[in-house]
Length: 106
Image 1: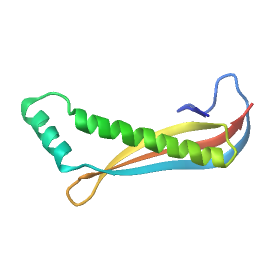
Image 2: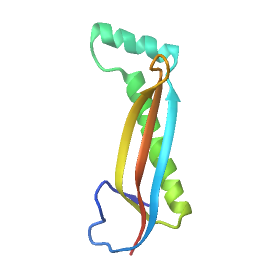
Image 3: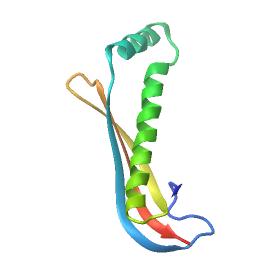
């Protein structure tokens, strides 16, 4: 499965549009990660715990979108966009959404 942010795949012809597909992941951030991120905030540097959470959520959203495209018979997703949103009363939930157009290319 080809995933691309471009409106097509270079050298390939789109022969069928299957529709828009999404992958959504909502991930909670726990106390340990909050504490570690707080220390990074105080002392400077990168928050590896949050970066890891973000990476996992993004990969899961892309995988889910890819699976939905495959279930429609697509072999590529074009125009892929990934969005991030903080949710929850205390902002302790992270939502990652991947979207794109499922297509068949030859």
